[in-house]
Amino acid sequence: MIVRSILSFFSVLAFGAMTAAAFFALAPWFSDHLPESVRSLIQALEFNSLIIGLVLGLSLGAAGRCNWADIPRRIVTWFLVREQKFFYYTLIAACGAVLFFY
Image 1 (cartoon, rainbow, N blue to C red):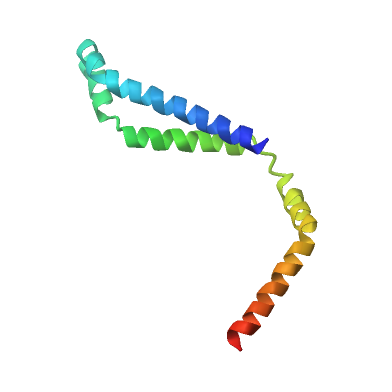
Image 2 (spheres, rainbow, N blue to C red; image 1 turned 30 degrees about the horizontal axis):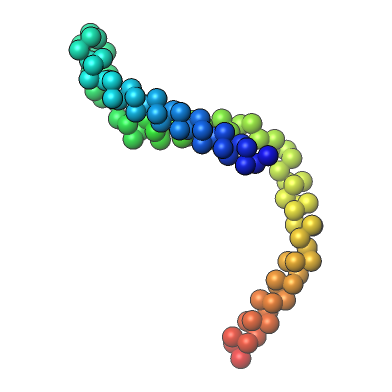
């Protein structure tokens, strides 16, 4: 399920980046056919800020679809499922610290 949402995010990001690149590729042709006020707006647009805005907008949209009330329960469940492994990892780290400081 998480892989599907990640792939969906990157596919929409790729579509937005390709659309922005096509816009910038066609901008010189558009500037010949547009009024001067719109022409100055197109020339002031920067590709880097457009891509950053696209990434931030898509990230906020993806974060808005998350069920934030369910996250603490999932974190606690994740720790409880892996409790025995964490105990062993702590024991291994303590033995390693004793060997290191001895």
